[in-house]
Length: 286
Image (cartoon, rainbow, N blue to C red; front, side):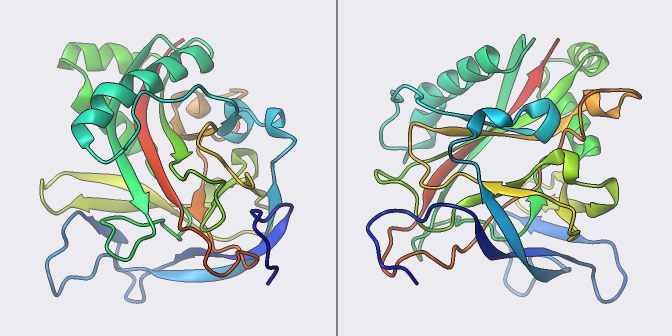
């Protein structure tokens, strides 16, 4: 392990945790929220593989939402939200910035509905830490369900579902220094086969709401990337769903990006734990 004060750079081979089906053949599920004692948070396993993860640093403009289902944005202005510790403050100060970013960045976007956010920290007592399991946040079914849930009325939902709609996760680190531990890896959508994607029932224990996420089977044809030494003025747009990809003859290549935190074997001992925020939004148009 290299001992350095700089974050690891360049391509790396690291272990990623893929989907292994339930041993009893049952339908896979996750439990979300405060899981009661005695209940398993999920009923499926992991299938670890050593994977080559390419460093996207220096070639950020090569990747697009329509081709890869992720996009890298550099040199974003400082946020008016500084602490990222209070949900109400985040919604007041950071949500409008995310909405503006999406309207300015996603071609043809004319409406954004932000529906939640998650803070992740690697501290032992943190409510949520990095997820080291390859997944996609939403499926086609749950994306449509989100539109119906968050539109202002059934008639607005029907109108929005008749056009192009996407779910995009805006991801950024919160660390003062460049990220060293548990960076985020993401696979180009054009290399992800439909057979690799496994719908998972996502059950929210507290509210009773049930949606879907997706787990990912390993396939050697998948191309994986990360952005080395990511800083707080950089963003990754993770497109979890794009309705345009479902249309015959569409130029959108899949419209869903598999992603995961991973342990970089080059991370120095004592490196600061990764802190991040992801904001999930419905994006409509053109």
